[in-house]
Image 1 (cartoon, rainbow, N blue to C red):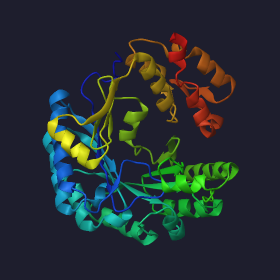
Image 2 (tube, rainbow, N blue to C red):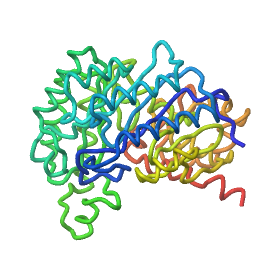
Image 3 (cartoon, rainbow, N blue to C red):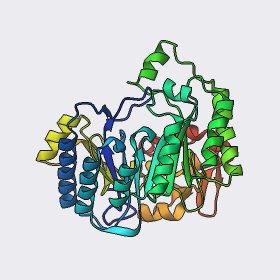
Image 4 (cartoon, rainbow, N blue to C red):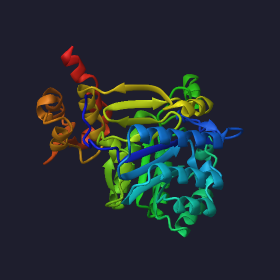
Length: 393
């Protein structure tokens, strides 16, 4: 069985709130339009899952909590209070410098709700902004406009929430390089500690996928998208932000510690409908639908699927997620996580090939993506998919 780097209890928690005011055209997350949903039943079911989880895998000191969705901030004020109190009840031991992030839509936060979030322990808010052109926002199905963005950030700061992040997207339908440049400039004017900037992926079971199949989705071409990525990396660097992961930029000390748990292949609890978790060498995925989840959580852990991750798969995962970070992967961390196995021995062929192709470069600690590798990350990660499984067949 794979031994985790941290053989104690997980120190990170992901919680899923699957409700949204509406479904964005690009979204394939496990989310449901809020109208007529049994929200309190869901929060009670989530509380039961917390109870069963801590019975099976008692928590230690919690370093990071991340509440995603959906849009967690569609919860009404009393629902939000109930939910945050539940977390405190079942995971009472928080580190002194806990990072507690909640995702938010700028159209669903006001000062009262943000104050309740802060009172309940939230100290970092990530706003899904995506663009600073209202026509682009409408074109991707967002309910907010740019005025909502400024108002939400102002309200957050008023209640003392200053560790703020926003998401932007590039490669959107009808988006030009100039439009992205404008959005990044507006974002940087806000002087926030953290920015996530993702390229649009057309996923199955989305409106955009249907439009794409019918040739009705006017996306930028591959060269334009590459130029967009180069532009945003350049702008963020000039503004003094460290690119610490392929899509993430931060002021020193403000990288998302929760996401680093994933990228370092460390354990975390995953709770809520459709949530994924990784505990004691086993990955799981929860039942997705709200009512099926609610019913299952009354009986026990609401699992849709779970699987023990063998050592080879865990080592491949270590490389694929670890190389997303610009610090790269650490030989010492690899050896610690896998009982003294040496990274250079296990992946000798892959590393040599990627070094020869100038997609990887050595560091004092191990290896990281080169500048070229950063632009062709999927090619790099692909070298590790199933590579050890194939060798042992």
